[in-house]
Length: 224
Image (cartoon, rainbow, N blue to C red; front, side, top):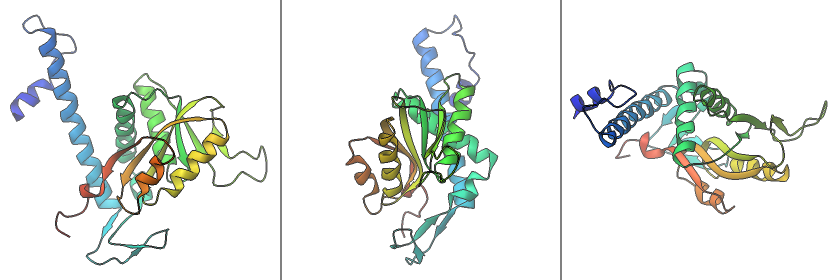
């Protein structure tokens, strides 16, 4: 199987006369899936190395006040150029996979910021540009006093993104602010769904689909 995959990765971008169009398309899909699996695994490795903390006892206090066995500090991952590229590509791929027709992506500062910028940068290379925007927790008190920064306007279709979801409160706040400013929120994408405190369900209660890139089993030992 490994040999087949490696050969598929070297297939030309046009179908050679010796194979059918259908077979050629299957090779391209095989190459895409293999590359995506490798990219997912590499980003998991970076997150584990830079951002993930785990204990057999619930020693980590979360922003909700609850105690947990694991903790993510995604700022350390976002400082890696390789990780930023991978975040942008994997989230962009998810947007394409779910056929989300959007103009922009953003979320509540600052957890969402590096992901939104990464997607915008990757989307440009993919010739399917998506704008990035930032939602402030509170409007600025000077200048234009904006709460949303970015080249977006009422009526734009957007995805709200978040780095890590526990209760979903930050994502919900971002969704509500976006809607108050006339943006059409079509979905939420989370880099890591912790699977605690009903975060996904709380977001879905707003009538939106929620898609994740990773869930906690990607990081914790099978027996913990």
